[in-house]
Length: 197
Figure 1 (cartoon, rainbow, N blue to C red):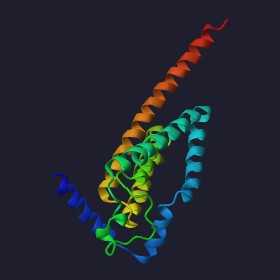
Figure 2: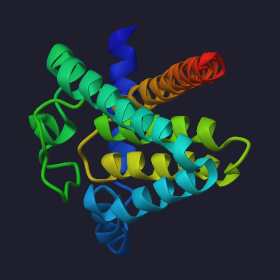
Figure 3: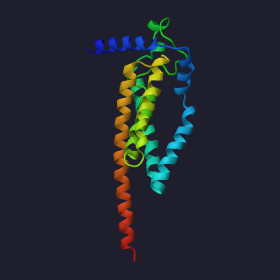
Figure 4: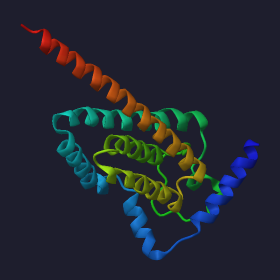
């Protein structure tokens, strides 16, 4: 069963990785980068603080936790535990796959890019569900960033899928915890204020 899943995963990767266009190569290299998205992150924080004022600090802390948890679970635990070679490190594909960005670390299961971006998207979707509905489009952004990893030959589709699912679960879980702690803190502060002579 597992062998069959791995086989189909590899075949899907080879198919998707061969769908290339010269104008997309540079674009995908940019999309997969870390620093190009800094303006987006700053804009997202601006929207949060604009809508939630000082309460936005809770969501900033939540965002930090989301990224730390998603990144550490995938990079710190799963990759060294499962030891699944990235396709660009697998000698079977050396003369077949298209790889433009270098290879990164040796192992690729599960994708940290997918986990991090989908965790951010899921968390902010919940944060903005009623007040910043445009945050739902972050799922599309996460999907494009994740696909770039297949396009560039550094991840299999299953790496991406599992990373995305992990990210979404972490995003929703951290949001739930953030709201609970925020509510408890505010209730405690409110009660303390009422009891102050």
